[in-house]
Length: 129
Image (tube, rainbow, N blue to C red):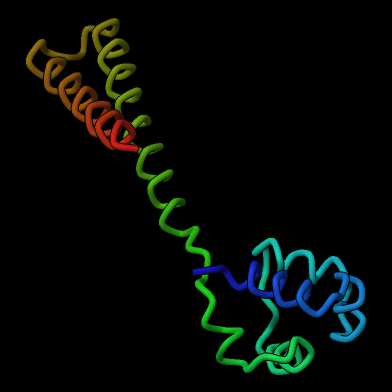
């Protein structure tokens, strides 16, 4: 299924229009049309009906396009960042606390184990990709 931007671009091209021509008919800038087509933004709710008319499709057909889901990737990236940060923090914490002679060996091993566990989860998740 295509994104709404791909749908807009394909319909515009089928009509033989340039981005500038579509922008003129929609009373927006060609940069706005470009952003729509690259899924960097979407037409606002007030322009959807007019866009459907200009492209000779129904609003339903225009909106049935798949919305790009970037949030899932952002969440995974954040989780990966946290896993790496925890691993690094545990390692640094063990070193600093050992230098200050403020940690017992058992606590050091637990902290290093937590760090290794986080790196393991990160590596397993990225190895599946």
